Image (cartoon, rainbow, N blue to C red):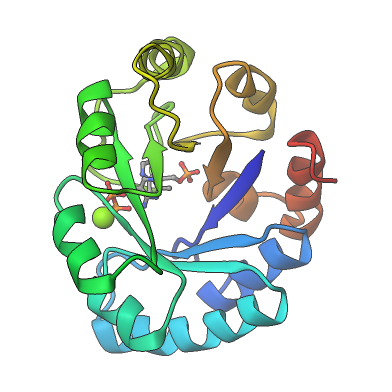
Length: 207
Ligand SMILES: Cc1ncc(COP(=O)(O)OP(=O)(O)O)c(N)n1
Ligand SMILES: Cc1ncsc1CCOP(=O)(O)O
Ligand SMILES: [Mg+2]
C-alpha cells in the first residue's frame, strides 16, 4: 500500500518543510500542490523539493502544471477533470512521465485508462477543506462499488483514495481494494507530522 503526501498551504509549515517531514516519516511519493500560487513560486519550490525527493529516492509529481513538470524533469503530474486532458499531457510528456488522473465515477476511471493514465486519484472519500468545489463524496460504499466494477471489467490501474482521510480510516479503506492513499491535512494537522507519517506508513504495511 502506497502513501502519497500532498502539500498544502499552512501558517505552520512551508511547502518544503511539509514535504521534508513526510519524507522523514518514510513517505516516498510527494505531490507538490500549490493552488493559486504564481507559476514562478511553484517552480522555485518544485526545484528545491524535487532535489529533496531525489535525496530520499522518492517520486516527485506536480499538480496541474504539465509544462513545468517537463521543464524540470519531475517524475510526473496529477491532472483533474478540469485540467489539461490526459491524452494531451501524454502526447506532450511521452511515456516516461507518470500521469495521474482524478476520478469520482467508474466512467471517469474508464476514460482515464483509455488515454493511458498511470494511476487514479479517486475521491473525495469525505468532506475536506483542503480542496474547494468537491465532487460528490464517495465514502466506503463508493469505493467498493467503483472498484468492483473495475474488477468486473478487468481494469487494474492502481487507485489511490483521497479526501479527508485520517489514520483511523485506513483499515476500512484498504478493504475496498485501493492500492494507496493520498493524504494532506491529517499529516499537517498532527502534533508531529514526522511520527504521524511513520505511524501511517506502518499501518499501510510499509513500516
Ligand atoms: C492523488 C490526487 N487525486 C486527486 C487530486 C485532485 O486533482 P484535481 O481534481 O485536479 O484538483 P486539484 O488538486 O488540482 O485542486 C489530486 N490533486 N491528487
Ligand atoms: C486534492 C484533493 N482532491 C480531492 S480531495 C483533495 C484534498 C486532499 O487533502 P486532505 O487529505 O487534506 O483532505
Ligand atoms: Mg488539478
